[in-house]
Length: 397
Image 1 (spheres, rainbow, N blue to C red):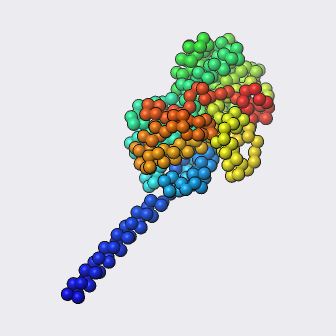
Image 2: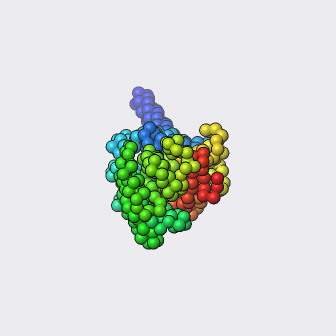
Image 3: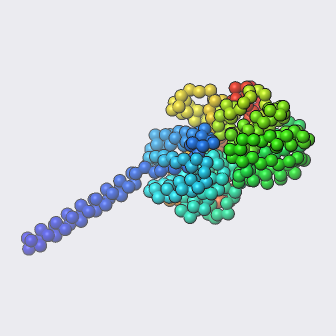
């Protein structure tokens, strides 16, 4: 009897030890940090934009972790460089898909890269948060449910603001200069429609390739036409080629109304001539001198604490900074609402959030099941370059 009793006691003890071990393992797994992935241009044509997005994510994560994390779990950031290359972007998403505890991936800067990633995002059921890529098809991607959520410019809305600004400047005839990518094509359709609806004539359309160095024939054609200004849709390197050629052909004073691509880097330092020689205005959604809300002030104070004091006009890619910051807070709010980090539950929660305070604005209803863009034309405004090459809101110096 004593032997049987001892064996039973040992079995019971082993059972409780195993149970305790399993409970401990579960507790350890639940304590592991959640991962926010960043898939950004960190070394190619929009490094400053990629850095701004990364810093926005970092500042939001610092705040969330200091407050206890998401559902009691801290967040860690894993950043990968897509180098402006769509194939590299797809490779990065494949790597993120293999990571345990992945919450979402934050994209970075280029529409062609994000468009290439759409299929794998949905096949792997990964949420993507877009703080800087404006192509309309990124969000209007045909997937249902849709895993892409954006706090950024939307080309279809940007066209309305760009054309309206042309009219405010007294321009009735404009030439288009577009980069030869999915982003450029997205803008061609939107700008044609906005111009047609607002009585502005598009005199000609000119395409520029990434890394193209000569744009002389196109500027000569624009100069010979009756175009009163140029609407520009490029990133920094190609934008600099365009406006430098304008200076060479003595048409630097021709107004240039730019989409926000040239704000992704040190545009002024890429120019051969002083910024004061040009008349360049740029679409934006955020500027510390424009947004005066408490969340924007908190973001600026956190920026100073982490990265040092700097003139607010000298913070590169400031829109990407604020968009990324807001997106991380939005997904944290969604996790709290869903009481879960499962992708499907997070998606549903993001689509039903209400009254979330952000740096860019107060998001009454940031997203719905049918609308995954949080910003619209009423949220955009125009800026210009001052003589120091810094973006200031129109009316400032």
